[in-house]
Length: 151
Image 1 (cartoon, rainbow, N blue to C red):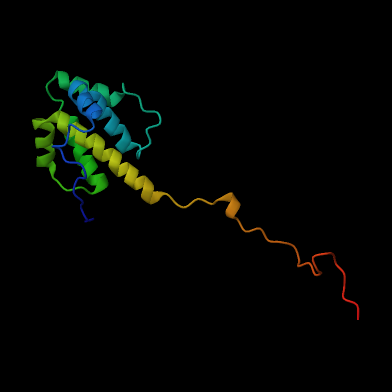
Image 2 (image 1 turned 120 degrees about the vertical axis):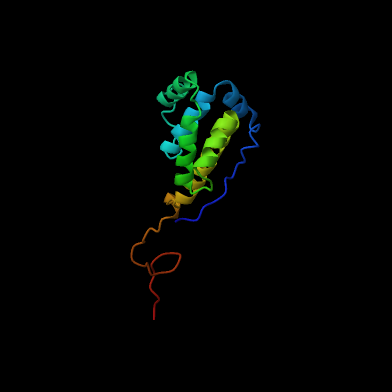
């Protein structure tokens, strides 16, 4: 089993950043959908839309009083992908007891982990100006022309 790390962002620090906090309280489906997209696409937010299938699924389950199910599953997926500490019971408690705090934590943690993975996986790029260009055969002569010494 791989070494497990602690969560970088605490669930109790859900008021920062304020924009994500307010989004999680007012429109939690958007925060859920954004974190889900980031996790599944390895941090690539290209093609993300605030109104997506996962947002609608969250809203639909919310109408039935079951909105905690998807964040609970996603939290388990995050633990598996990023090797984070925790268990299914804690995932359920976080998703049920304070969904906005849990969603904010998931959003911040997924962003942090994907940025960290991106930095680790980046390889140094070749710089065109630093390439070695072989030169032709050596030129003999002095700086004023190719005059041979006279003996």
